[in-house]
Length: 143
Image (cartoon, rainbow, N blue to C red; front, side, top):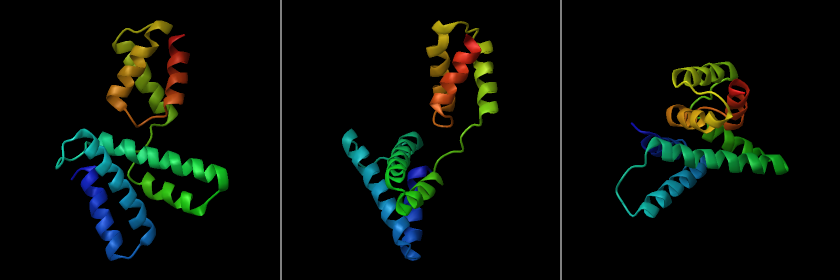
């Protein structure tokens, strides 16, 4: 079962349990997925998990912005609900080990190869790390 189907199933569960907050939020996410499908012009297809994760990350980012502005409890609940669908993030030590492996495996050296390292990291581990932290670690290791 892919992430899109999981979200649709969880909406059904929220409807049965009359969880209005979850139901409302998942409807927004499903609506965003529908708009994404509509923009491709290919109806009747499923989005990839990466496409769905991008939508969910945007929802979390928007909710965090709202929470930072006014400390809304609703935004905090949205963050909690949506975060359940996100993969766990790599911790600093694990990320540093992965970056070191990428650099040594591909014989990268110097500041000029920073983009190549980041590209390789994104291709293999996209969405499971903090980009700012990864950039700092790559810079620290290469320079």
